[in-house]
Length: 72
Image 1: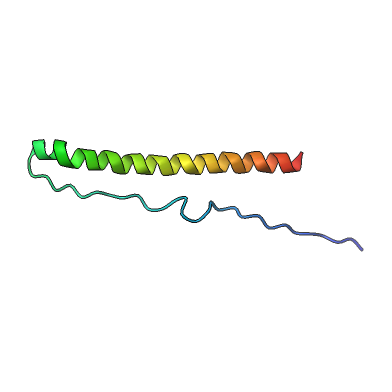
Image 2: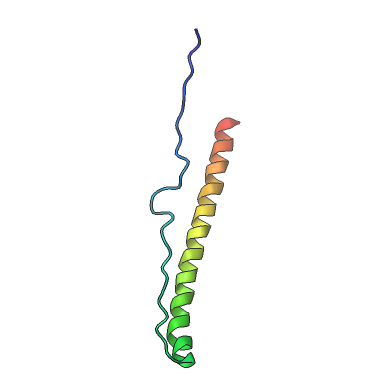
């Protein structure tokens, strides 16, 4: 009789790596206020979301690299 061993590995990224993106509310009533207040908040939120995507892609690349090294 043969024995089969099942190894479970996490497939999802670690908790906290991907969280909902901040969606700033546009509060300005004039174009100049939009440019001075809202645009910087939007840029900061976009930067944070982009960093999450980059962190996830780096995590996935490292995970694939580790998986290949353990199967070699």
